[in-house]
Image 1 (cartoon, chains in turn orange, yellow):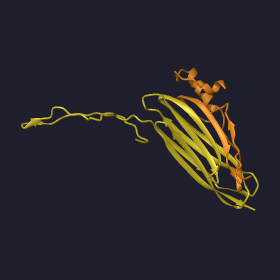
Image 2 (spheres, chains in turn orange, green; image 1 turned 135 degrees about the vertical axis):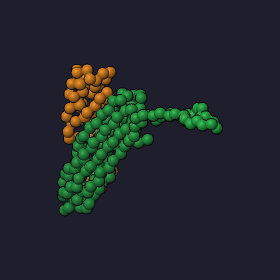
Image 3 (spheres, one colour; image 1 turned 180 degrees about the horizontal axis):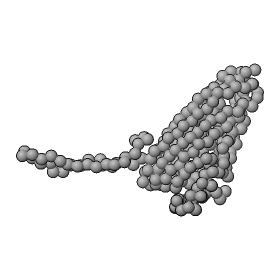
Image 4 (tube, chains in turn green, yellow; image 1 turned 90 degrees about the vertical axis):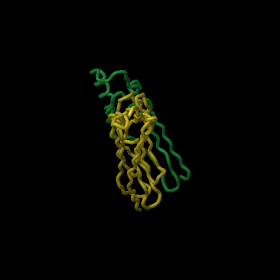
Length: 77
Length: 147
């Protein structure tokens, strides 16, 4: 267990949660779990409410033309 | 300037009597800072469990940023949940925001960890925003591990 380093790199398909945004674009997202020693270790970690509400709300606004000159790059992933 | 926005600004020159008249006046460093604003919050909660068992912990994170800088900005949102200061879940998001744009979010982080020895361990949730404005907030709690 000593010097145990557990690193999980996740590039998420859904990059936001219950987000409200206007003229904002997610351009990158990463999650990592790390850390361990002779006393214990990290096993798993995540964001619980990883719904893609942002994308839904964003494109709803976009189609209503309330948001201009913006795009949601995360929607393509 | 932090958590502040210039809403209005003006300057003027006045004053005149039989002895003289004010003619001109100005500020030499007349660059009014247009800084963006941000607020963040982090909380976490005490948990208890047994040695060598999975211990699930949670952190709640909320944040708001408004870009009033006059130009496009990129903000980095870091959400962290750490047990015993070193067993960590770290979530990082880069967000591009055009001038006068904003974003806000509430989310819950989860970290499962295990401990070999009984004792009390630190638990910290951190919400941090960096960019042309920055804010940090840390919530603390305790993990109680028993045999």
